Figure 1 (cartoon, rainbow, N blue to C red):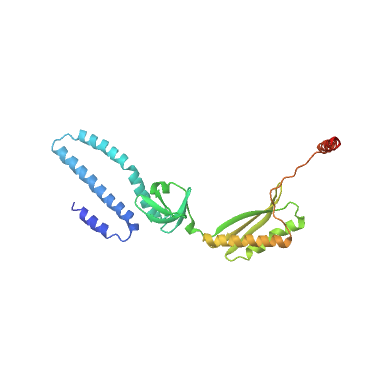
Figure 2 (figure 1 turned 30 degrees about the vertical axis):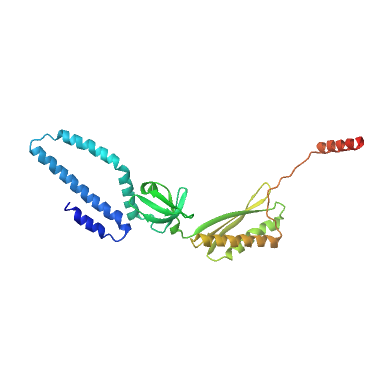
Length: 259
């Protein structure tokens, strides 16, 4: 208990919760080393006193395996917490996407990490599971790549279809904090002419990205109106064979005669 007092005193001196995993890791290492040394000294003392320690050592081995299995998950989360503390794949305030979960890091504990989701609830993730997953950290995002597409009517004249990429480029380059990449007439669809545009937003803020995308969408609508080009809509064309038309006409004439 004499060695525990300085440790408890040091625990009270921890500055922030972020220092807890590092302190506990060092403390457990010290206590574990001291425990191993004490156990070896005890066994040597009993052996010198003529006591058969073979059965005792075997029992300690079985007990150690049982204890190791019992604390396996706890130690896994603790070591994961230490990895997060030293490696810093994310810190408090970072916005993470982990599998189907997303939110801002609110707390990093010894066993779990807590995220605050966009809808307000708190998401609790095990540190071991968190490090074993693919984590996307949007806080370190420098540029956001945006790719979007639109389609125009298949009856659009060839000249106007060729002018649309330049019009879209002009609309995108009018926006602030934007770097234009490309815009192409990408494909001829079953009932549309398809275009794809790509640009980069130099600000990681999601709301700014959405404001820019909204302005680009409105600008493209204006450009299409000025060029008198219509957006494509799903359509189907029904083709009736001539034989069916003749039979339908004959049936109509027969019905007229009956009347």
